[in-house]
Amino acid sequence: MGVAMPEEIRVTGAGATLNLVYGGSETYALPAEYLRVLTPSAEARGHNGVGGRTVSGKAGVRIAGVEPVGNYAIKLIFDDGHSTGIYTWDFLRELCLEQPAKWQAYLDDLAAQGLAR
Image 1: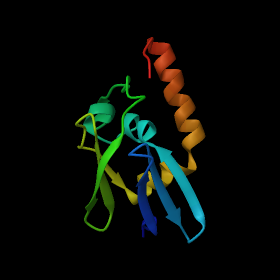
Image 2: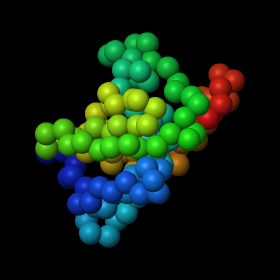
Image 3: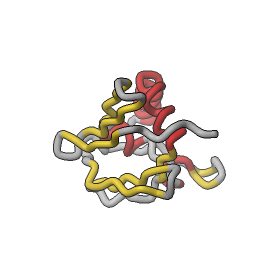
């Protein structure tokens, strides 16, 4: 059995933040930029883990839409046209619980490659 679906999924701040509620009181606010640059799509992850790249230049990106994908995920649509990432409940939960470490690793990757947010 996978991770439970969030009880509430809401986009706030004119698309700047995805808010998730678990268990009635456990809340997370994930910035659109964070979700965009850590997209589970082939753009960032590659195919079968090969060929991915660090996504940069997304500091101003916004979430334009959220669509359900079966009973196991959502698809986020961003205002830069990106819409191919499928965010499973397990992956969203991981993004919530590991946000500080994942964000720092992303910033470190940008710096190492001379890229900007």
